[in-house]
Length: 303
Image 1 (cartoon, rainbow, N blue to C red):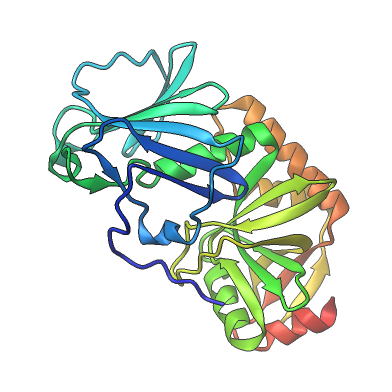
Image 2 (cartoon, rainbow, N blue to C red; image 1 turned 45 degrees about the vertical axis):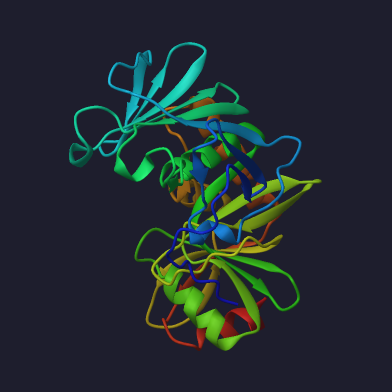
């Protein structure tokens, strides 16, 4: 079942909440004149805030003279991460928006609460609506909470089969995740959770996979989840073939496909332990496949 990410502004609110991969986030505008919305790709993930929701206040502010502490990471693109001992802060800047940062997001070290301050550019003036966790900030926050709660996000396509089993197809860009999503969607009764990013978590002694809004080219994005039943490491090949894979190799390949804050040693260690546990608990195989419909019955019959 395909859930395309569309474009548009959504409903105007002063408070809203959503959940991705079991991570609940609540946004609150401080000023009565500020309005918030979720981008349409996130609308399907709207959910009531849980008792453990990350509380994020939102306001406009002049950010030209912001002291954030020590720089600990530079993405080489829009954002840098700072640490002042008590808070972690993301600083966003763009030459197109002027010399000052256009957004600063400051959070407690456990990422339970924080604030997003937006420079009052034209698109975020009081009285207009905007999304304060504009990508990649929303994904960065989810990844940090996952690192603290024992979860991980992977470059993967996730499929819920008709019997509710969760099949995970893992690979870097170009490995065939989007192709896999389209083939399963067309050939079998199933729900495609995502064609690019899947979240894995340990829950009640078992492992579960979740869809995310951060889709790939085919734009599959579902908030559903399912028990993880099988893991496939994708490889292109001239014929379909499922082979066993050594556990150490499977763990290394999964870690290489993970979205982990590599500047945080504890988060990296947590992700590596979780993936090692998954490899020891869930059947993992190398799937060499031909990118045509034949691979779907081949996988279904081979399990």
